Length: 509
Image (cartoon, rainbow, N blue to C red; front, side, top):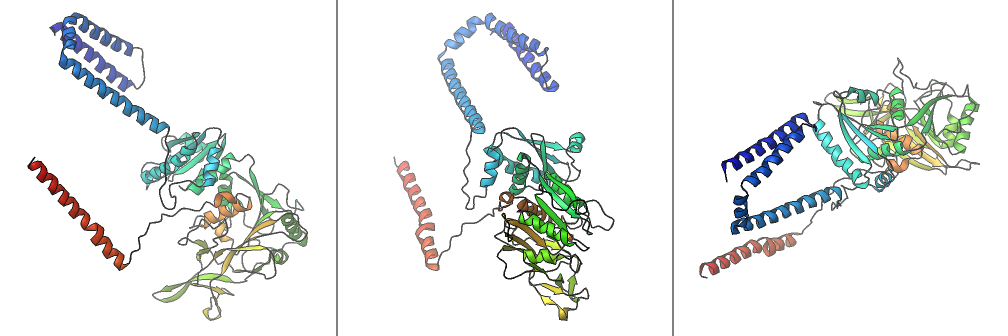
């Protein structure tokens, strides 16, 4: 090769390097880059023209042809591997061999994902430096990929709240915690837990054409939907419901003589004052039309809802249930946290809850079922045997009754003369949904599950979390000895003998 040819190849290399560096630094294409590519191409062509005899002789050599054949083979293998990798990322099938199908979505989730006919934006908001941010992102990616395997319309995006404060403000995201926004055709829903149940419920709400309407009764000293100085506020619960695309409105019987026909759920929470007869009748008439009712009752309040409770077949305990603790100083009661640790395994409301979780009440009263009613009852939440019920706040243990006690009932059935079945949930405490207690343990999940069930969305909350199950091999003493002497010991000995025979044959070949 001549010196000029070498110089031309050097110029071509310099032009290609400059092209790559400039393209990397600019991050985009500019017309100037054509100059580098053009000079490189001209230099290469000129190098071949100048030393054409050298290249003709070089390509005529046998070693060159063999090398080019090997290069072509290597190139074909690379093209094949790249093609396989590309196709496997675009078209792939996963198989779940776990015992409990832990890596597979439920049928409800798959059905909802398949119904998407437009782009679903899944925006994950996070803050750098927050605790567990990397682990949470990785867990969310693993979960959302299962949905993306079902539908190509799901697009995932990560947003750091400090880098995009405009987006955080637009979606109402607060700093310090991670949140996920699902945006579908302008309908949005925010979730704060990385669970299939949460994502599927949010997916159902953003794909829902009609928003569910919840009326919260007022006028009898019930807990307020707005912030209150005394702390008896459902403001956080209201915000949570609105974030799940429920319309929450106040209802007073002073302005309306009956429950509106568009009410999906009626909520009566913590009444302190007496109901009038026509108001109780209005609630019962609503149930006769197939209505759904959430009723939270504090002990010893003169609400005069006896007729309604008798209609539902529920009796108040007129007591307070507290958890008894064994301390180094003796037994003590905890009036601030009565634990509900037993849940109905048949109700869709509490079916997803595990045995190791709990709800937290504050001085609730026990509830019991009136015999003789033909309704379907579920004891949603019960306390353990470590609880006591007192008839007064003196906490005289000698007069207390020992648990367990039922703190929440679910009732389904048809009232006399009604055409449709009603659905109601009665709880013996109001604090569990108030601002202070809503995010304690399972309280939030219980509240949302009750609303979803009464709003006729129980098919979503019935997604039971899957637990990893191990395959156990139970062997008797005889089976274990047989396993050791018939398999574990003979196999290594057999391989050792075979390897020795093979070595000896090759040695003497």
